[in-house]
Amino acid sequence: MSTDIDDIVVVNISRETAKLSITGFDTACIFGVHTRFDESYRTYNDIEEVEEDFETTDEEWKAANALFAQDNKPESVVIGKRAANVAQKERITVDTAIDFTAYNLTIGSNSYDYTSGLDADTATIVASLLSIASVGEDALTFTNNLNGTYDILADVAGDAFTVETDDNQTVTTLVENVNVATELADLREEYSDWYALILTRRATEAQQIQDIKHTAAWVESKLMLYGTSIDEAAIITSATTDVMSWLKARAYDRTFLMYSADHAAYPEAAMFGVLLPNDPGTTNITMKFKQLSGIAVDTLSSTATTHLIAKYANYYETVAGYNCITGEGIVASNEYIDIIYFTDWLQTRIAEGIFLKLINAQKIPFTTQGMDVIAQEIMFWLERGIDAGGLVAGSAEVEVPDIEDIPSTEKAIRYLNGVTFTGTYAGAIHKVRIEGKLTV
Image (tube, rainbow, N blue to C red; front, side, top):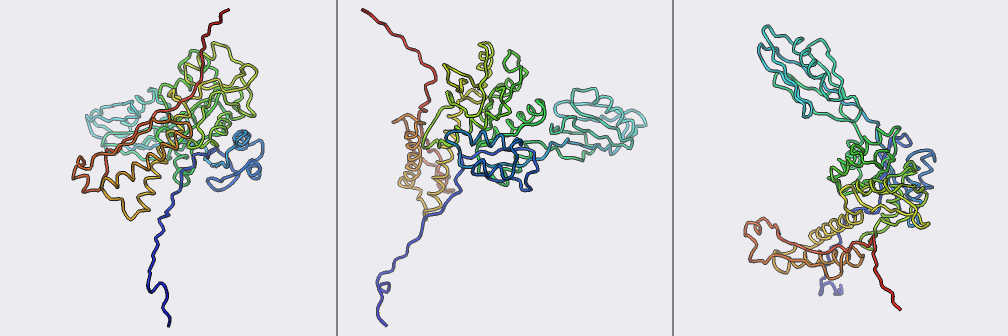
């Protein structure tokens, strides 16, 4: 048998090519109540595919059409399926009737108390508690079951409430609350590769506002953006009870609202159709001055625009014959949409990049050289952000701690703490003032 080369030289190559599921910053999810398919979601690459499942009169089609109608349309969209809201129902049982004992029912922040007398019985305790609670401010219906139990039902399906009692009563949930937030949580658990959220419209403005409030509260703790639109009349006045004032008061970073008389055409979907195809690591854009294909402009008074600006709402007008977003392109906290989008991208890509380094190496040693690997990965993404126009050139710096300054307790558990970086947002020019002088 002849000698082979691998009898002399043995070469083993390990492939350090583990891959991650990269977060889809270019993907939107349209979420609505429908019966067009049985699954919880489907993905579509164009409006023609959407039309295979939806009629052009369906809200899901309208939102998808606004998304895909823009000049530089997204590559795909997710359409999710939600259930109708369900009213929460709780049953409280008075387990024991004890003389001269305090019985308490607390609903949210409202507390109701009744102290029993001599010869206490459950029927009296129930009736007395309900007579007190039923005149409260809670939007609830109370029912005495005449058997030592009573039920509490939400008047508005989807509006959750909390119930606490003393130790002599037991709370049993008969019907779980279901609203857009609970349904979104279920969808996100099943499929999370989308970043932008659009809700389809419901029958009434009150239902629309309910969805906006529930969704904005849920989205705020997530790495995503939620866009909505409405033409609630009070928004363009000095009123403070409208939904935009509600969002502003909570300084939500992840919700933007477009005031639009054409809200049924989904201008928020059109905004995402403009934003999402621009990868923040390739092209950084501002939403101000952008044109929205298929969306009608509003003719607004200066008073109306003053109120919209003060409430951090976006709006769509004609300026010098050009239809464009003349609101600032901001979220409810008064931060720019492009800043949120870029920051989310940078945070996610740095985390993904470092994780890939960790899983593809045999190990990254806890040394100065090892920490440099981490620093170089961070700088790589900061430089991508500079190239895209998201950060100012020359503003990015990364610092790692001196190896001698790292506590031995952190080294022992292999925890690198104290890595920092800085950079300056490039921002965008939204307004210009020029002063000149001409002489002879």
